[in-house]
Length: 272
Image: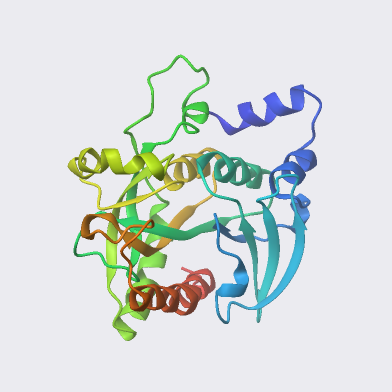
């Protein structure tokens, strides 16, 4: 799918590029910075020392909120999108009419590997499409081959920069860092019936947005990579539903709240 085709189709029915951004993010295009953080659920107040935060707006969607963050000379826009591929994809596509030049997706991920534990940090090598939203931006028509099962990849240059800083910070804090082979699914409830099939595809983590996010970012020509905190491990019976200890949950909060902000800031500050 060509991004211009998407924009022209919206304009055909009477909307402007400013309308697109306002509907997709709740703010004007000129309010979005070059550096953007996208998070389905987390809000910036849980990420320690990220910077001085200014709340801008809620969008027409109740789940989407936007903040601008200043850390010395670094300016970042932080967007909470809501959970799931459709809302994340719409917000990301809306950034194509702004000055956004690179974005990092952050969120929780479930482990499908006994060696990837709660609180570990994961950077995905790729994400396999298990969502329905991707179908609408895969080609110009809806009669094409279904993209289910296709791999989508982060931007390689931004990925390398993120990995460099994540390795250093994780090693310094003795926190494992893993390479993720992601399956992006549309449902938490029904995922358990398909775990064996998903692991047979080679996947070692599961979440809900990044296959659509990587595809949308490529469509909008926005470099995007992702950074995950492991929230649960289905394989070891420590799922989102049950089985996690208080100690595991606290360790996960430490890596999410303390290490992930450091990795984000160092990546955005890196001129390479």
